[in-house]
Image (cartoon, rainbow, N blue to C red; front, side):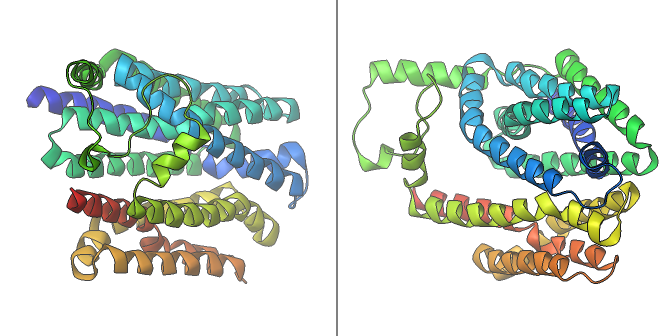
Length: 364
């Protein structure tokens, strides 16, 4: 038990360093993009279009790549596949750490678009799979919460560092943090072969006992490891359960609105109120600290009283208020007030996940 705790501790250190490097550049990327694409201006439509295009390509790519990487981790181990996003995330940061002129920005843009397909989704999924391999089922919820808290701490730590660093040195320090995360993963995080063992056991069981066609055993699963899932296979997975389908619809539209807001928000604040790096950092700190407080205290307090469905409605309402306040902001302090609405809007994801898991468990 102590050995498993020590191994999870090493994973948490890796996750913290990874998040510090990934989120440290968030407060400065807007100013860097504006300086590279529209120097001397506070408005730049090209920057918004390129950011939106990048997020769209990254999201679609992650939809295909992440299940493949998850299947590969079942065969080759979690640590082996975690090294892929940990290493790839260094490349775009290193480009901007070297130079921030327009040619280097476009190189960063292309590298970030390609590497984010792997690093952004796979790192979280593989880390949670690693935790699930090491923690008994009854303790996984608490372990997942600790992992999320460490990632939030990395977000806050990286944002605080960006608050006191210059723009150029921010990318250099972020690169060093990402390199440290990859080295720490390689040196200290121990491999888990539970996923590979389960895969071998499942294959052996399938050979000895052919699968039956009873409805009870027809639980939704991704296809075995071979190549990227087809659109038909992804559609079959999404429609395999009515609860899962409704959760996916809510998640899609909420994510669509949040992504659109995040794509244009920082550029809107730059054009409307002339926000700078430090003001972006302050805004992100409010979001990070408020979101962490909400997940640790507000959700455990309200979920037993309201239930996940009612709390989800409250969280979605808070998300709408969150975006509406940004849209009518009349002074530089209004976005700070809007950011405080994260205390409710951040609960959408946990509510959807928890409600789906509860109903799925009852179905069995």
